[in-house]
Length: 209
Image 1 (cartoon, rainbow, N blue to C red):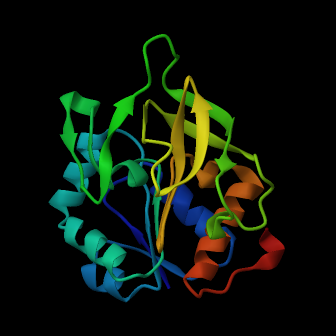
Image 2 (cartoon, rainbow, N blue to C red; image 1 turned 90 degrees about the horizontal axis):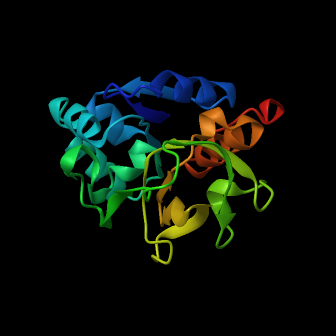
């Protein structure tokens, strides 16, 4: 069973629908025991860094997230769920994040329209298991004003360009993160959730892809 962490993220239900659509068994939860026993863990996220960290902290979910990652089980952070893994963010005048990956989440440079919203190309550096069966250079749907980097970091699995090149997929062993929203990215996005479920040992409905 996959655990989808509920800390009040605005995209929680759309992530849930996507996981349900691909046929994977899942549970939306705040229970540390459920998170600890899950075959894989998904951390959704939209909105501000401060709200995300406060939501995780107020529900005592920071330790379960860290423990899930340390356990070696597949973990997927989506949008703000990716950014929360870094040292901190410039957003909200500076927000301390989880500190699991080095670097500060930065706002797009002046002169660019923010948020970066819409379809954009994702260029994978290597064969990423989370993107198996997806054509190289496929477009995915983004909505964000802040970005992760650097794109040459060893944990950067794919990049996207919007004024600057930024990390759009994180890959570090069992840990994956997408700056884009797979749940808003059509069939290719559904395949990402299906691939993640398979990595966690869960069965999926191939006819749904």
